[in-house]
Image (cartoon, rainbow, N blue to C red; front, side, top):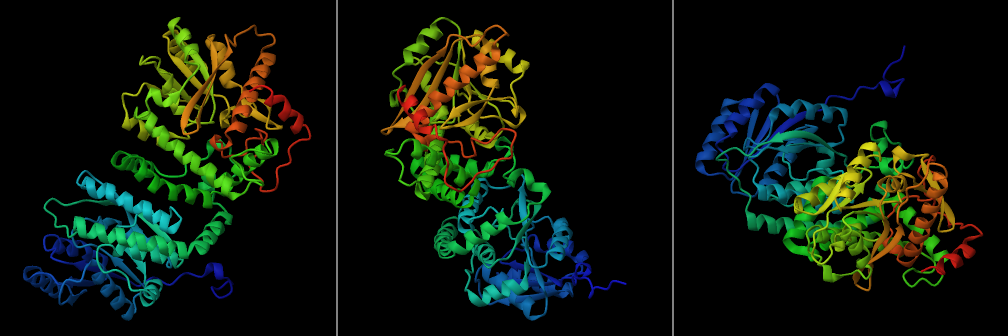
Length: 610
């Protein structure tokens, strides 16, 4: 017979010993109802009176007498929420409890979620369990957006998105780890306490888990949050925590690498595994994080956006092993083909890759500028504009074949002589769904129309045919395959090695039976310059020989793409293994790139055609 001592996997953890801690400073409207709702849980409770006024003090004393399970602890004067919680935590530890459930006294928390939080604490007794608020319309907007600014800094301070909310006061603390922290560090005693203790417990190695919970702001509720004083305290705290993060940077990075090396649960395999096709990988970063960036842009413009964005870009650079190696892979290829390239080190190193990431961030800000009509026509050099003028004056639209090189959103610069031209951009995946959704809120009247599809099909073709007939432009990127078009690709030489290009954009351009142009919009010498070339009067032709025509079109597209990518490599924003076989797993390699023996001849041929 197996016994717990003979098989550790069968060992049942001892039940946690949980106690309530409720800090209170002049909250007399909801505390009686809160205690009444807590009574059925049969938990002991430390109710901390943090120097309340006489009315509240007498009420708390009466409630402590009414409920035998409530112990009243009193501060002679108001010391702050953090001090009150610390008093409860340390008293609970001395009295032999293993965990504390912190509940605010103002009635904001949904106490029906306590059993779910207790179950998580029992299953993972060494973790801190925190509520993750789900707000209704009662939440003040300033507080709502302010929380996301704090969340952003917490993500920087922990180099992680693990802390999904850092300000919710509905938590279960593991007391052994918490007491260890309190003995090592003097924590703040005011409203910034909730943030600091969460970050420092994370630094200490404590796992942070979250339970979604409804949070309301009761009508007539009392808030002790001081808009100026507490925001100043929180700002000072984030400054201190940021420098604390820098001191712990090697350890935090090591922890992140260990997490990346750990086995990946099936439930999250699609977002983590490097074997997935690039188009199946989810966006890194949340909708609200992107919205925070856009709101910062509205308030402070580029300077505030950059102050927020650069640390985020550095975080992704440090933690994104696959994208970082893909960047180095590409830049090393360029360096071998362009030994004297002025924008790359010799040999290419991590600084080049970081510059690559930062260029992507700067392009994102320019993308917001373009969407908001803040980049004017005279700020963009467009020497070949007349090619489109002539085409549009014919009354029929055209296809623009573009790529993920440079800034696609600046195709609004094709507006001719202040004439509004409707531009329809095909987005072949929902990969940028969050970013596009936020940008659309910025400028609902934009003439740039995003059409998100998972693949090109007859319905898409019919829709776009009408737009071309109406004199509109259709923009299609020709440099990315999607998971739905694997094995429907054409291989063409690119940077000395065959790469997979999708058939769809070129087939669609043929079905639309209209002029096709190539367009690249690159930042050169501090300004954007649109490079427009006539590609074909039409790609339509007889069914016989269609594959040969497609191959020739893809080869020419690849040739021109390579020319501009070698010219401005830091503006090539494909952070994945571009040269893998489309049917093979996604991977990157950190060894030196071995370009085929024909690369030098290939280089000579292409540099003769600027």
